Length: 324
Ligand code: ADP
Image (tube, rainbow, N blue to C red; front, side):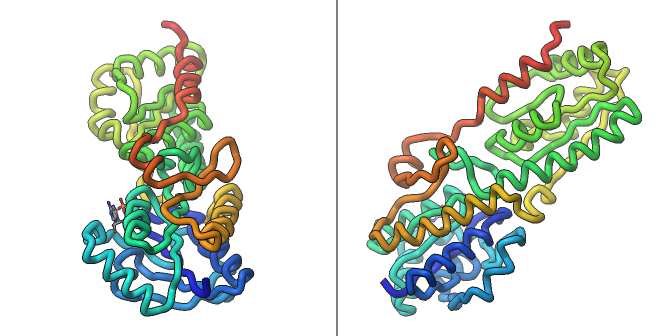
């Protein structure tokens, strides 16, 4: 093996650059040339490749976003585009590919592996929603940004005895809401995976107030309900409370990656190169019980579903149920 390539695809996530840097460092360590593919699968099909050196990547370990850029490119689901990508890779003499992205991106990596071109995945998404792995690069940074914003909102909420409903990212997965909500001591956490009643949320906030809290906090995952609609219904049921809704939106994607995101990105980036050299394909890296773990794309993505941390969710439910 002489040359490998790396791309980022799907939604950007802090720590993707640290993974790219580790792929380049480890590739060079093994005497390989490492190419960056710009704009995800679109760049793969169009041949947007550039040879990467240490000076291209080393500063980026501390930067959010992705230095290789990303793109949504639904065309890649079709075999003719996958074959075009392989022709481009062959034209550049590239033997194997690292794909950093979410489960959609992994499906692209799988399609290349099925056509005989080795590709391995590294989980990069703030949503933490990839089956198998307990952790994805970017999640820790997104939670810490969300928590920082919630803490600031809590200062003003307390000063005016208000109730704030903070909408965090998570269209299909409640992970950010659970982690940020538990860390902020929220009165209620609302996630797409669990049914809820606004009456019950009102009851929890009222019980908190009766127990001496000077503000109330609800953390709502975007996929569970529209925040404006939630606030409107909440206000009708709790006319005595001063309620405000806030959407954190894209700030959760940006910023400096946390140490945890950079460390796991580095571990995964380096290991992905080792796995390609060993001749592996159609696999992705992840974390189980804090250990780097290899998952089979077909076995894991097609046969299992992502699970949120029910123990944390239930703990929050229990702690904020003051029994009124
Ligand atoms: P994520 O990787 O974050 O889940 P997407 O689902 O948008 O994000 O997927 C990113 C890209 O991966 C898509 O724009 C497309 O180029 C490619 N992709 C997604 N699903 C498939 C698939 N089933 N087969 C091949 N390529 C896919």
